[in-house]
Image 1 (tube, rainbow over the protein chains, first blue to last red):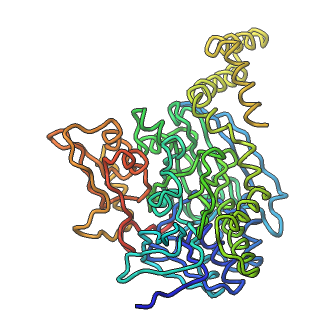
Image 2 (cartoon, rainbow over the protein chains, first blue to last red):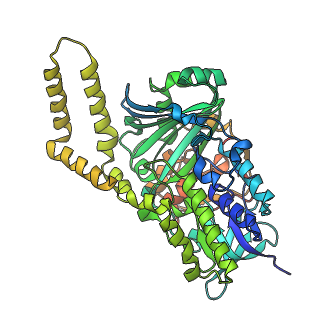
Image 3 (cartoon, rainbow over the protein chains, first blue to last red):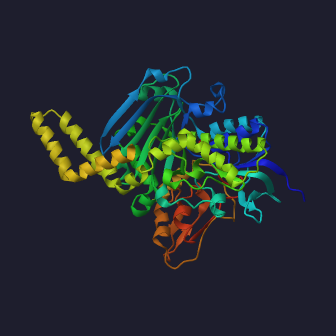
Length: 435
Length: 94
């Protein structure tokens, strides 16, 4: 039996896999892409925000036909307690530019389009095919992939692991560990459908303009977590995610928390009358810089979520996936054109390229944030949001109490809850982790 | 509790690989804390407690998110695979 050989096998047709396969195929390499879903995107879940810049580098004219929902005009950050939210909104007409910077998307639709670009560039996509095992030669070099199709062995010079946060291949082969419970968040999400005009009216939007709401606070019951609400054309993506380790040690259910978020008096009116058409869940890499595994070895590289490339502070993930996928492809192409074998030493070029890009610089900047938020989650996600709400209400309620007395009362309640050393300690810790 | 999750799952599309569950729980007398946590933590409500006090799994409604794998695979309490190609959850929106 002859085994077909490719220049590269890309496992997965998500953001990183498509970016990688597209870049490789455009440069004339023989690429096989494996996807276990019925179509590209049918297994993928995201909020989802698309950052234009990273896609533009791959498909410059993507705005002509990519399925985009709304461009983001306004970003809201809500700090919530049980009945209120303190919010910061940034809305700018500058975001109504000719080539908008950010869009909301629906991943299943977007991925199908992205995958079409990959196939038109010449890559071979095999759907409904689960890669079950990496094949290695006696020296340990990865030389191919076994699949669940009959006789399904394929060989390649390089295997690109774009298999997502829950990828089995890399961890089964010992190339990277299974994610730790405190390095991944479990997010659940629902799709709520409403007429476009209703969304426009409720969010103060005109056609194609979109709003993004990110919310933290008592909605995660003291766990490290965040909720979100994104406007699509005719639907709202509503979700909530918390660290798996926090869920494990607590008493909440993910769907219970999502339902409570939906019923919150700040959120419920935005969803009223909507028809829910899907409920989904997904893990999000949250370990940050310190959780990034080895990025390459003999005959293999790992990209995107599988390598924990996610900036939890800025909620950027798919753009890191697209960028690392593209960089891996460029490194592989460089080796190929210089006739260098894809050994660990040569593929280290990929790691170098990632380190020189914004990806690793941003990951490094926030390297201490995950641990900080995790170990002090009750303060950041319970105590401070409650105190902020109380302070705002005390400040705003007009009741004949002199303002100076109000300020003193607010300050006293803050110090009582958190103590002066506690407050200073938290401020120093955040400043250190942020810089 | 799980009844409400089941209602949510009715909106989703699945191709169930009948007779080939992709998650299996190792036989146990008493479930570990992590395994027990899955009866509350699984977003699709696939895990439940039997009358005998063991944790059971019916992965038909599974999202393939991997939460149970992260918590229970390293200790060998569960065996976790992806469904065969084309089977399992098929997101309409994702």
